[in-house]
Figure 1 (cartoon, helix red, strand yellow):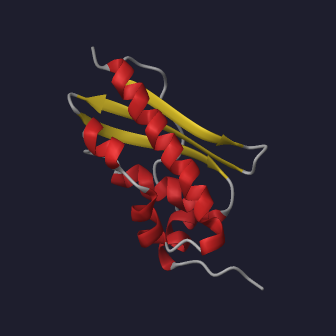
Figure 2 (cartoon, rainbow, N blue to C red):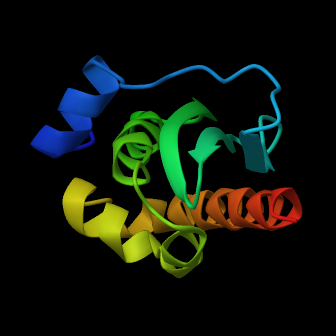
Length: 126
């Protein structure tokens, strides 16, 4: 049986936005979770300006849903404050991308990457 993909997954998987990473810089933060060996990995890097995220890049390993989630998230995190970043939940991505129930665990790995990004931001702020 072929997996069904929502139009948003097809769009973001077929034309991922903001893939890659920012080079190390004093205004760049990074967060990652999962592993290639476990089948799902997300790595996020963001450029921070003042108290907001200016731009986000992502790297992801996994199924089309994972790639789409990284792409979708890279657009949604721009403009967030550290507090807003900390409050982000997987339900936003699930609602937008309509993950199958059996793949929602991958979104928890994405939450861990977002939390790691937030923690890195906390270390950046004096």
